[in-house]
Amino acid sequence: MTVFQKILVPFDGSNNAEEALARAVELARLTEGEVLILTVYRHHSMLEASFSMVRPQDMPGNTDTAMREYAREVADYAKRMAIDAGATRVRAFVKAGQPARTIIRMAEDKEVDLIVLGSRGLGSIESYLLGSVSHKVTGLARCPVLVV
Image 1 (tube, one colour):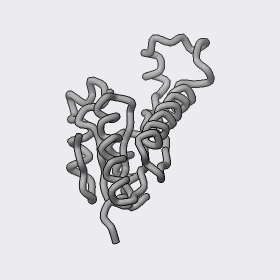
Image 2 (cartoon, rainbow, N blue to C red; image 1 turned 120 degrees about the vertical axis):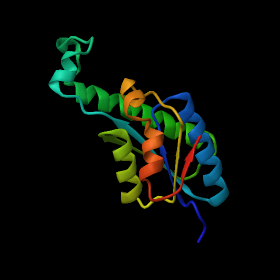
Image 3 (cartoon, one colour; image 1 turned 90 degrees about the vertical axis):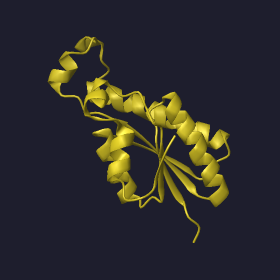
């Protein structure tokens, strides 16, 4: 059995995520592995939505729907990037939730061999107060993690 047959790449559209995806594709090409791309969006409560700068009447549906649609666009973009870079087996997923926990859950559910993620993403002020997603993932993952 070859190592790194399933490589999970959390992707938020940041420059570091693009670099992580490029490294993951290189590894997948070497091992003939599969790249699993995960874009996570956060569920927003009505209270959180009320703090946004978007008027409710301007929203297409609700905040979650808009965020899910945008996350799908980001995941599809990443999938095209991976294919253009030479990956032959690529799947993209969109999940709602807290990023680090959602990444860990996906890694366990899909039984991935490696997680490749950027050292910094497009995170909010929360990451500065509570720790970065990459830091949390490296501490919680049961498989190897490559931080780019």
